[in-house]
Each structure stands twice: as C-alpha cells, then as structure tokens.
Length: 219
Image (cartoon, rainbow, N blue to C red; front, side, top):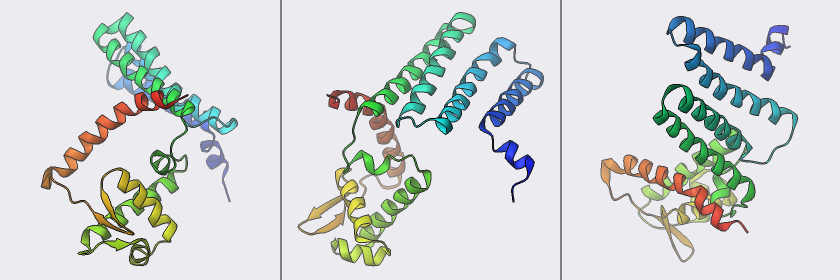
C-alpha cells in the first residue's frame, strides 16, 4: 500500500522542484558559487525535468530527450559565453549542438533491425537483458574450440534460438563473430589487456559519427 509520502515523491514535478532547490541551496551556500554560476546548472536540470514531465503526459518519438538536453546545453553555453567565459560557452554549445543533432537524426531515421535497433529501446530492462545476452553468447563462443550453431548456443546459453540469432546478427555486423556456413565463431581481440580501452575509444568515435551517418541515410 502506497503512503502519501511515496505518492508525493512519485510525482515527477515535485521531485524536479526538490532537486533544483537542493542544487541551488548546495551550490550557493556550501560552495560559494555565485548566482551566475548556479543559473546554468538550473537550466540543465530543468531541461531534464521538463523532458520527464512531458514524457509522462505525451508520447514523444525516440530521440526527443536528446533534443531537449541538447537545447538546454545550448542555452547554458550561450549564458556562459555572455557572462562567464567564451571558451566554456563554445564548449557547451558544441556539445549541445551534437546532442540536438543526434536527437533530430534519431527522430527522422529508421534503424535497420539487424544493426542499431537491437540496442535501441526505451525499456531499460530489455536493453540490459539484450546487453547481457550479447555478452553471454560471445563468451560461450569464445570458450568453444569449434564453431557453434544457433541451436547449440541456445542450449548452452539457456536462451531461445531467436534471442541467440538476433545477438549473433548484431555481433557479426560489429565484427565480433564470423559466420562459417551455418555456424559461428568468435573473433578474438587483438589488443590483449588493452582491448577494453581500445573498444571504448572505438565506441566513442563511432558514437560521435553516428548522427552524421544517420543524416546521410535519411531520405
């Protein structure tokens, strides 16, 4: 049974007001930051809260949250450029423009089911499950001396064949596994202990380029 306090805390608007108020109080009274310094932080947090409030009331297309966040960063950058530092303002504006562009391309782009759509979902639980499946399937392939079929991997991973097949399709397009007729084999990392760092840098580069790739694909 929910209590009145739980009902109040469950309200997005109330949580947002509390968070913004706490931010202003902490930064102003405990860090000595001026109101000019607090204002950009309030803008950013307000943008996040506004997106949450609107998302609960209306059905927005995927990518809208990045449009709101990017716009908030642009406003923050403009404020910093006029009041604090031109350099900081330019940095915030560049990052904000990228997030805005990313959101707009997500809205206008229809991802391929075999590639991006596999890891693009609004349901956090489903996304975490898919990432876990990717890791499980890849690790089982990596530990196998011989190439594996979808059926054998499904049995070994305790997953449905459709789940395994979708994961393998995604991994194949990311050059993490290779297909040999009706079997699959893991492509082992080339960088040894540096592999996680290399993969992270590669992911960052691909993520930065992704909106531009989407823009070229939009009709």
